[in-house]
Figure (tube, rainbow, N blue to C red):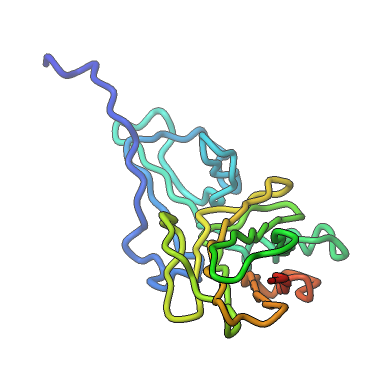
Length: 211
């Protein structure tokens, strides 16, 4: 027919029996994508980012007319369990945060503090939650940021991805009250997984000096 030579793009979606919870591995299925024999155990890699998404477990080879492939999806916990076997003393998922602020912020004005989230180790983290808590004497100023949700004196920011050696910076605009104390300690925290061997650097206090 006229469409005999048409090649459609593979469609990837969660398998029907994949785990419903977002924090559990589950499975992925791709349609119209053939595999070679011996593909089981091979990596499923994101074409653009190079991130490891899963491990191939089943599929039809290139002799079949209707191709498909199935992979067991990996999350931080399952990937870490694999790496831990190969390198029990390594670092698998090491998130950390630090902050910076202007030397002095004038009372009654808006100042910008910056939280910088970094990742060490062998893997990237997706949908990383970062919280920012302000003390009395400071409020969040209007911002165009789409990654943070503000409720009172607390902001919750979700980073799409943090990759090793590629810091992600979050600018935080705060309004310094006219009667603010001499120091405003802004607390920033990044949530890591149990694979992070040192979670003490997951929290940082940014001291904003006022006058």
